[in-house]
Length: 267
Image 1 (cartoon, helix red, strand yellow):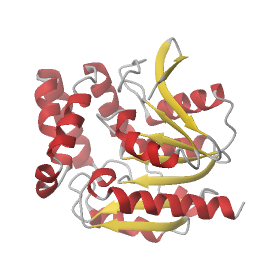
Image 2 (tube, rainbow, N blue to C red):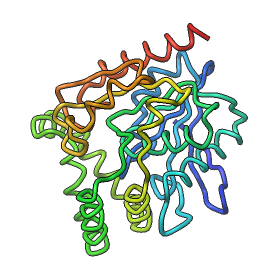
Image 3 (cartoon, one colour):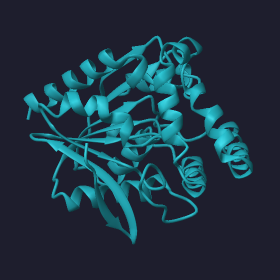
C-alpha cells in the first residue's frame, strides 16, 4: 500500500487513504504504526474509505516535542482529516490510539460518528501506573532496543506469543523503528492524560468497547465497569490479551463492521 505525508507544525505525518464511502479513521497504539492495520484495511476498504495515520513519533511520522500529549496528537489527527477534507468519521483506536480518540471526542464532540476503544480505557493512569511509566522512560533512555524487544511480546498472552510468532517478530521489527524521542514523548503524554470516563456517560458519540479478559496492560477488572456506561452501545469481551486485532482477528473485525454498519444504517 502506498502512503502519503502531510506536514504538520513542520513535522512529517504519514498516512494512508484507500477505499470509498463512509470514513473510518484508524489510530494505532504505543510502539505501533499504521502497518498494524493493513489486514483490517484490506477487509474494510471494499465498503468504506479507510484512513490510517502514523501518530507523532511513531512509524514514519516525526516528533514535535519532548511530550506528545493525547490532546496534541488529537489535534494532529484533526489536521490530517481537515487536509483530506473529511467532515465526520468513525474512529477506531487501539490502546494509546483510544486515548487519542477520547481526547479528540472531548475537543471536537460533534465530529466522531462513533469511537471504538480497542483494548483501551477512559481512565487516567493510576499513581502506580505513572511510576511504571517513569521506570519505562528510564529503561528506554538506557537501552531503547532492549526495552522494545521485551515489551512488545508481553502484549500477547504466552500461548499467543507462540501461536503468532511471526507476527510478534514483525511488530517488534516495526517498533524498533520508533525513535527514542517518540517513545519517551508518548510515555510522558500517556502518563499525564486526564480521566475521560465522563465521555462514556455524556458524550453524543456512541462507543464500542473491545476488551480482553487476559489483558495484562489494561486488567479487565478495571475495564469492566466502563462497559456498562450509557454511551457504550456495543461491547466485545474476548478470552485473550491486549492484541485482539491479531489474537481474535475475525471476531473483532466482524464486531467492528456490525457496529459501524448499524450506525450508518440509522443515519
